[in-house]
Amino acid sequence: MNLSKKRRLQENLGSYMFLVPWLIGFFLLTLYPMGYSLYLSFTRFNIRTPPQWIGLNNYLVMFKGTETLSRDERFLNSMWVTFRFVFISVPVKLVFALVVAMLMNKKLRLIGLYRALYYIPTLLGGSVAIAVLWRRLFASDGLLNMILHTIFGLTNLPAWISNPTYALYTLILLAVWQFGSPMIIFLAGLQQIPREYYEASAVDGAGPIRQFFAITLPSLSPIIFFNFVMQMISAFQSFTQAFIVSGGSGGPLDSTMFYSLYLYIKGFGFSEMGYASAMAWVLLIIIAVLTAISFKSSGTLVSYGSGE
Amino acid sequence: MNRKQTDLAKRLVLNLFIIALALGMLYPILWLLGASFKPSNRIFTEVSIWPSVATLDNYREGWRGIGIVGFDTFFKNSFVICILSALANAIFCSLTAFAFARLKFKGKNLWFALMMITLMLPSHVTTIPRYIMFRRMGWINTFLPIVVPKFFATDAFFIFLLVQFIRGLPRDIDESATIDGCSKFGIYTRIIMPLTVPALITTLLFSFLWTWDDFFNQLLYLTSPNKYTVPMGLRLFLDSSGMSSWGPMFAMSVLSLIPAFILFFSLQKYFVRGIATTGIKG
Image (tube, rainbow over all chains, first blue to last red; front, top):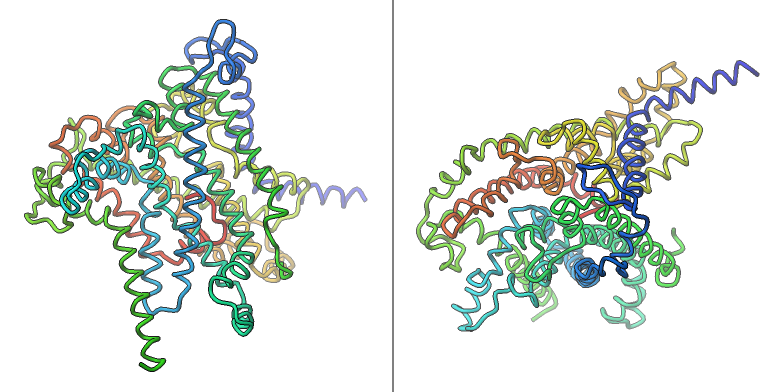
């Protein structure tokens, strides 16, 4: 009895040896920082002097204001900008990814090459180089206006990137342009749908549009859902593109002030690390709630076939 | 026309449509490539991709960099950071994945669930405390804050990817090895490691590329130009530049995209696996 107990302990210890690096990382680089940032979110902290407890003040300033401080309108604006970015770019990106995936599902000789070509924007799109290029494409004397002017003869064109009405849409376009990952996942999903479904429905006289809504879309719904949640989570955290395109300012007039960018500016520009920590926790809660809502609603929207 | 001919015509139209759409999408990148060879005064007057006058001046000037730091330094720094990160991820994430996928131990399900949660966690909640920690340790303006976390398997995405892969391997090989008296570490290094090579390549590939483009952490921790990476070098260009330096800027942008390009076209199938098995990010 004792012996087997000892053996089991040894067995456990032997296994845990493999987990040691991850465990250290988990406690030291994830759990402890999380706890510490939660604590900091209730303080005023500029990194040079010790944190000062101010209770819920940071959170109040974000949403309501306090007796001494007015509500942080820039924060609310950054939230609004980010929500617009996420909930326009993600659905448009997914629709586009699905359309292209269906094209890429055709049996053509060069299909391998085509798939690679359509993935290139995703491969390169997250880089500073492309963000810099974007800034030039949509500048007042940039490539887009050059094309519109020299080829279509249009004048009085807006300076897209420095116009508060359009600046966010250039970033949305940049995000949609990088549709490659959901495209590949959709493609894998499309290849799983049994051919017989389409053949049988064709016999019954269903056209391609009917087939799309009756077969393709329901079969893909778990994948669409999965893509949506993943893209949403990462879109909320977008930083680099807005930073480069706006030159680190979130401008013009805060129209590209993404949540992450404002958090960075607050924490590392103004050294308001307590406030930035509170913002991080609000973001965590927003993402958690939206993910939970997505999972809840997936019960009615997503059909899991009998095969699964 | 008979059926065969209409079929052929349909195919032709489909091919042309796909190519036209692809060209439209890739036009900005091709224009960038062309612009990097155009003399500075022509860049913003030419819509065409093909330079009417081609020059290497932009590359020569860009490579010299800003101030005393050349682009060779930025590239060297980027490569050092990315190669170390990729290797650390491949080793330590696979070690962790092996434990989760193959070993039996108390509390495994709990740890696994926690690992999966960290996968969804926005990195912002750890950013500030990590910054404070690394600052206290004197690690600001070194590569350590970017590289060291990878030695502790903090990129849960890769653990998940490797767990999925290892679970797909037949169990009887390592079971018979256990009976033959092979230790756990022996099973890992002699059986599982060699069999997971494809997934390890995917891990190396994605960690390299993501670290290359991880602008946020580089911006946070690298403060002097001699420590700057390629993205930081480009940003330096952007900030200090008047209209005249767009040419060199574009030239260096093109160079900064080449590693991703080479890796993608030489290791394409590992890309698809990485995306298709997990689908996270990007």
